Length: 160
Image 1 (cartoon, rainbow, N blue to C red):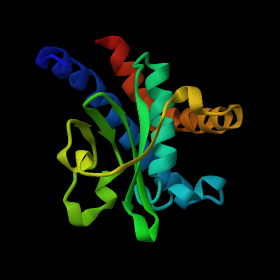
Image 2 (image 1 turned 30 degrees about the vertical axis):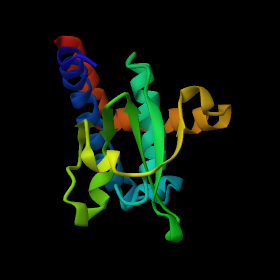
Image 3 (image 1 turned 180 degrees about the horizontal axis):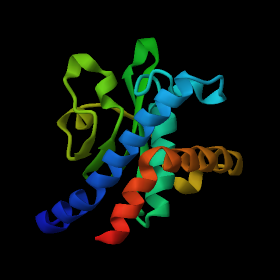
Image 4 (image 1 turned 120 degrees about the vertical axis):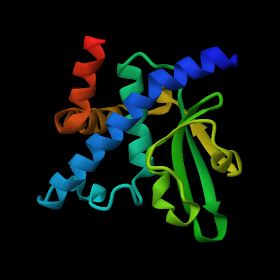
């Protein structure tokens, strides 16, 4: 991928990733005060990467940022520890990598990542691989995220 094209894509994607991270952090604070089924986000970003990757895929599709796939890696095969993120060519988008605090990773990774390159890929799938019930559940979650900060990004994007 040409450097200018790569830089332009990363520049376009980074604010979306940051806004999504911000929305999940706000959402986490709300679910801590509720008895909602979204309690799984209580410890965001810990153990949320699967669901967050699906949400990112849906958000990117809604914003016409196609071509991303969910990548799943088995970090510690004997323990069954996995990690997920989305990726398009060399552009990694991961807003939950900081759950691995011993790695010193940023809360928002957009671009090439040596850490991600070092992980063994277990599975890759795209939006077309989501079933209808996944789409329904995650569309609902994405709508909640828009209410918790992602809409601020959308409003700013239209002003630019």
